[in-house]
Length: 261
Image (cartoon, rainbow, N blue to C red; front, top):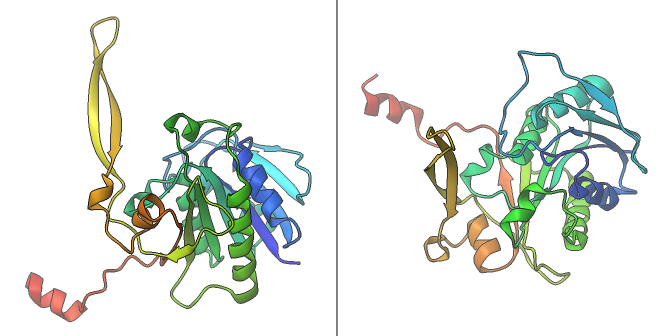
């Protein structure tokens, strides 16, 4: 039986991770290692300056499960050390979409990227939510039915056929209103998803403090063929192939001459 790792950045008690377990049932032996707490927007952060604590958790239908008081990337590293390599790694199902080049901020995508650096075919999967407050909850109000359906379909294909040469992971985003007939679009990453800004406020003692906030890019500037266009405009499932070699596709000799080196 294939060995499958499931992790996330919403925490081990998120309903999204239970949905992923249900979706993968019967496809292989499932292991779960996920953060004890919400770790959204943690990116590729690792815990190097203190020890990690791990708690064994009982979850029906899995070979073993641990909650780790670290980051999503820590969870992948811990899982490899504890259980050896895997045939497939799944990060998600995340509450809230993860699209554009900003996936490097996402703990969900970064966990899949970490697994991919170890040669494990990986899928990061996120479910769009229609209310901002749902992004940092446990998912009590969310219907994961369609996300589970598409995850099972894509995971089964990857287990059977692997990923094509040059593809290390897939970044999948499901519209919140998807149904069984929703098309799947193979996309590229949009340039960015949010326009960030810093909001200054004053605490009761008169001292300023700051929130980093962001507004989503308007639909009329979204470029066809990108993940954001597929999900936000066309209401399609977006599947973006990711290569973890971020070397620019440029003639290296030309670059040397261009820079005068």
